[in-house]
Length: 331
Image 1 (tube, rainbow, N blue to C red):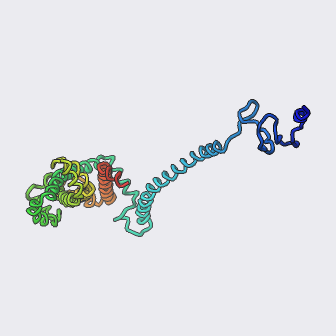
Image 2 (cartoon, rainbow, N blue to C red; image 1 turned 120 degrees about the vertical axis):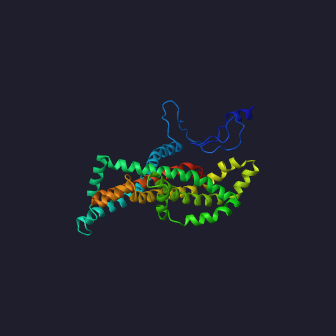
Image 3 (cartoon, one colour; image 1 turned 180 degrees about the horizontal axis):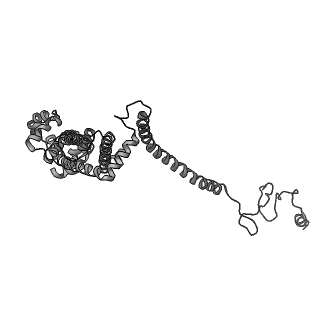
């Protein structure tokens, strides 16, 4: 009885600020250590939410993302602007030198007038309609001859490159004519075809044919044989093989020849128009020179240069369009 009373009245062993070592009725015999202060949890009523480190990092990343995008766009715009500015600076310096050299007496202004005088003469030719007439005549002749050359040279080049007997048969003739300058044959074309439009167009065809032909032969012969063997093993017949494998692979070389032919067609045509024509840029230059209208003569020369640049730019754009698969594969 007395022992039971002693057990009931025995105090628990504890110190201030600590949990009891032996809690009555707990059955635990392991010390729990100092009691941890209770802190209110975030989200409880009356307790504001506390931002976490992850939320802060996300906010900082979201704040930096627009600035990084703007910086990247500025860099791209800067590179594009520099690509435009560089050639513009070169052209501007050339025109400034052209303008200042006659004014400063470095050259005789009678034979090389300032660019401002040439510009004024070109505007006068444009307002009178003469410039449009001459440009139209030259473009018509050059376009017809160039188109005929492209239509004839590409199939011929493919046939010569693909079929060895054809190449062996026609190579001597090709070597003979491709080393003969087109302008050297101008009297022959005039004698045979007359002094009209036919002789000029035929001369353009001759001058444009060989650059396209030779580059087509080179492009077809340089096609990877593994591509051809793979296409044949997949069951490609000759026509799909040419259309889907050989010609696409040879496009860069073919367009190199086409661009060379475009330049040659304009140059040869101008020379032909100087000899016997009543319209065209070549005739305009010759007539202005004979009448001592030097600014108009230089205006015709500038028109030829602009025409050639436009022609070349169109061909480059077409080449990129047809060679898009090549650019993507190289990436």
